[in-house]
Image 1 (cartoon, rainbow, N blue to C red):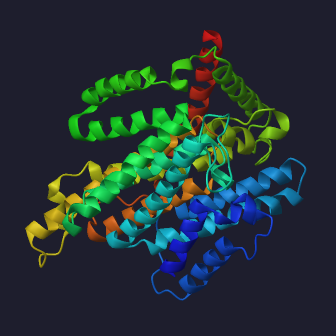
Image 2: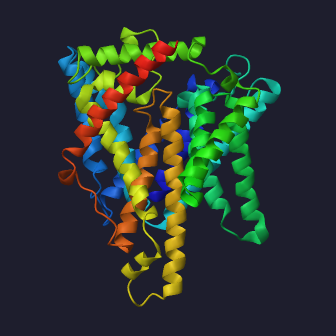
Image 3: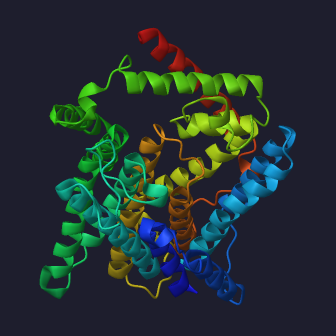
Length: 431
């Protein structure tokens, strides 16, 4: 089962089925076949876990997306939404259950990171000769892109940012006379260069967020803020689109206008929104903001669910980082304190890695319409798998459940709506 799931992950990222030369004669749907084979074998697996809140929240999110189509006058759209998002749900469940050991989790991270490195190599070739081995040329003549779900430079940069902390984490493991460390550092360098070649402002801001989270955990919030400001200033000195970043600039102004239109769509349809996938039917641009997109298309109900899905993922990664070394008291007495402490510090390092990946993804997604993209739910599955294992080893970590948070997420959702509205009004006034 785990093998087929790894094949599926590789196909999701590398996407040979989307190469222009292959797309004309695609052959069997290998990505779907790999996912179904993994699901079929998982059915017979003795290990199944559904304890994390995301196991209920994501199916509810899918259900609300389907209802949003029905209440907006297109009952057939519910089936369309189901067939689009159901594989995402299935992939989440399988990955969250399969990566139940640290070794398996590291294997998943390695597959994702190596595949992202391959895409970065494709981008280097594009930047060098103008076209990659896929047959895809540069976007806008200067920005690298790939195929399928990564045919936008911003999406490509989002993947690189998500995998970059994983590459650095994997580089910390020694072995093979230092060649393993060197390999992962080279991959990390490729991903950083790939981020630069995308020339995506959201990606570069996400890199600053990664640095900020790391320094915050190591040196405190004040130092993180100072270094974050310095890093942002340094990036703005590079020859990139960050130099053009101001509200009145055409691209930025278009995004702010789109955010405003999304808020208006929500005001007109506050409960279930205008229907999942309907944003571009009412506005010439996409939302360019994952929060605004969900709010406009699925109303306050869908927005609350999505916020809870992401919010629980952050809480799961923050909880272990708030604990000290005293947590090794949870470990059975037959395990030596030295071994328990070494394992705990490895788990904390892995937790920080995933927190950085989440932070980078959400920072970039704030400027992109990526509320439903599969990469987000694969990352959430990794987070859930990691925290589920941590709670098995360290029972004193908090157990998150929806019945304890019935008011938390609706309140946060209302605050989020007010915050988005005020932000858009301020940006429009500045323009």
